Image (cartoon, rainbow, N blue to C red):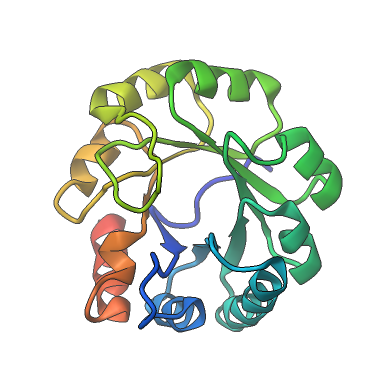
Length: 210
């Protein structure tokens, strides 16, 4: 069956360099809010530590019946039995990740221009596309140029496959992003920097269900 997002909120778990936060604690907090989907993003840890974190988060996701995707690393996703992987433009090609993970894994692929999105759709191997940054973002060291709502609308007009928007999206802008054609919104800073992560994620989930 074609993939569809189980919720319109797509939380991405990343400490964003904050030593006071941990990936596992953040994942537990988001899962406690009832999210059916989350992505684990670990950018600055050795592979062994990444695998350790991914196993722990996978156990928590299983306990809550949630789908866990791993950012960038198909090998880590395979090792821990995650539901799939989300790949960037500079990561392993989608076809290679599909060979590693098999036909049933969920593979997402980040795109930053209409041309990239159209090329990925033509290839036909990803289950969904990420598109952005919609707004300026501080969660990436070297962000791609902002695409804005007009860029998102252009992709939606051309493509029918599931689309998650990412990049600087906040509670104040989610309605505009969904209206521009996104099936889901990926959020990092708005959630993981919150004083109460669970309550923030729960409020966003409820808001996006209406």
